[in-house]
Length: 562
Image (cartoon, rainbow, N blue to C red):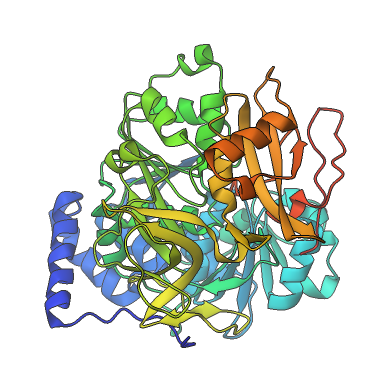
């Protein structure tokens, strides 16, 4: 195994193809025809000065379409011109001293967060996106490891931040309100006190650090490339038909790779975004009804919550203007894709990727109709290979580790941990196979493979089988230590309301539909699965029961420090 950064260095013929892809992007998305043509040179000049950083995208959009709406949230609307001016004043007024500064951002989805991200990009500082689902212990651990020079946070997180030593949080800017006298300024106060209208591009481009989900261990910081260019957008739109005329509803958290990517893609298309601090399925349907030509960026659990609404509630909303639902962040469970498309039409696109690899493959509605579990096919200019333990490609329908490369592979971990790379392809850590139709299937985590009594078991296969039982609403299957077999399977089952099911039926179903050695020896019936803020099940919390129930009937999951 070679420990080096994955590379994507196309030859002359491929480079010519990339430029053709870029031309195709400008034409098919409507970018060429969006905005006043006479302002085109201003846009190009802005991109040449600021590059395709987040700041550059906003400055260029403001140059071409200053009065076009950039975002809508609970506080109202902001145009690209207003966003450019406010972020410039915020960048100039941030209380930072000297170069090589690092800013931690602990915010939900709203204008304060995106203004901060643009301002940091204009200032050239490194940004760490903190997970709003972290407990005090996890926040303390990340702050201690990464040593922020400044924290920008929502006032609701004051108690979590207060649990960290003062040396780790000595300077804080609040996005919405000051939680206590002398606690630090707000964004609005900084903007009002800094009457500047121009700022020079930074000598060093800003980098963004995205934290891995931490579902199996402590979150790791992954550095994103500072200026991705337009080719990643060309790759994504080769499989997902995003357009400049769309209104982008971003429900996926902006601190997550998928939410941040949605923000970048939307503003690169000069399309308005809709943000809301907390996901509410009925409110999401209301937003789809309120705006024409909508695109919903979400994580799979959000679709499940929408389908869980009573049918009479869902029928109150007109979703005919919904053009695309783009998912990422977690595997699609069971037949969720087909159930959603049966209700809302064949508009679902599922992106398989990771914090490190960005995207690997995209499943279109046609792919998902063939098999709702598929991760689809690689988009343009993306390399994919399934390799065995010796680094050799495996045949069709044979499981191996997924390796990939594209134009937006991350730059490395902040810890310096080496990457696992073979022939320029990054190891994703996932097991998978490509079937006879060329469709990719993700079979589970490489480190999540269970070896029980000498037999290899993929928990995801057992989960898919159990989800076909009509009584089961959600399920997670994990490996737990076993003295006799090394490991055994444990199933954590959430039943549908009013349904009844016993352990014997669960085991018999798995034996019939998977294999005898895949039968879970432990079956736990619980009220809900523990999920992080992006909707991923946190498997390491499952084995830390017992699970006391709160008065409102929800499971009280333990809060771990790592």
